[in-house]
Amino acid sequence: MGILQPHERHRRRPGALGLKKSGTGAPGTGAPGTCARAVVVHSLGHAEAALAAAAALKAPVTLMSGPGAAGYAGPDWFLSVVRQAKARHPGVEAAAILDCAEAPGRALAALRRGAQAIRLGGNAKARARVAAIALALGARIDDTRYALLDLAGATDPERAVREFLKGRP
Image 1 (cartoon, helix red, strand yellow):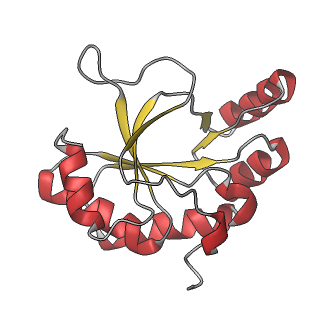
Image 2 (image 1 turned 135 degrees about the horizontal axis):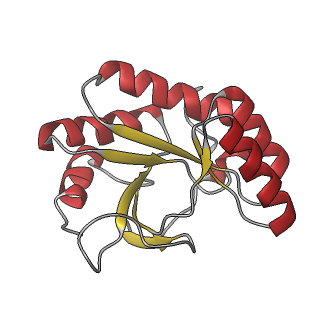
Image 3 (image 1 turned 45 degrees about the horizontal axis):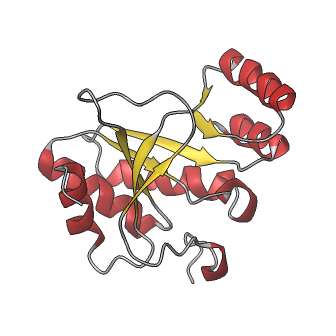
C-alpha cells in the first residue's frame, strides 16, 4: 500500500468489474435515455489511467472517489491524486467528485480543502446547509445518476476506461 492508495479493506469490492448505477438525483447529461459516466478511482494509478484513456479518445471524464473516501482516505488524499493525475495529463477535461457518505463534517472539510464537487447523503437539513455552504464556495453537491466503472481489481485500468467511455461495458 502506497501513500496515495487507500487501505485495501476500505475499497468496495464489486465482485466483478463492471457498470453500476449510483445516486438518486436527476439523470446526467448525455443522449436521451442514458446516464452520465464516472470512473471510480482508488489510487493515483487509476486516476492516471482514466485520464490517459480520456486523452486517447479526446473525451471528458469524471473521476469519483470510492464510497465514503472522505472518511477513510480524507479529502487531501483524493484532491492530491486528482491534482497529480491532471498535472500529468493537462489537456484532459476532467471533473472530480469526492464521496462523503453521510458525514456532513467530512463534506465541510472537503469543501474547505478545495473540493469542487462532493456527494453527500443522510439528513436532509444538514445536507441543505452543506449545499448552501458549497454554493457560497463555488462548489456543489453532486446528485447525478452515473453509470459507474469501478477500477478496483482492474488488471488493465486504461483499457477498461477506454471501453467504458466508448460505451462498451
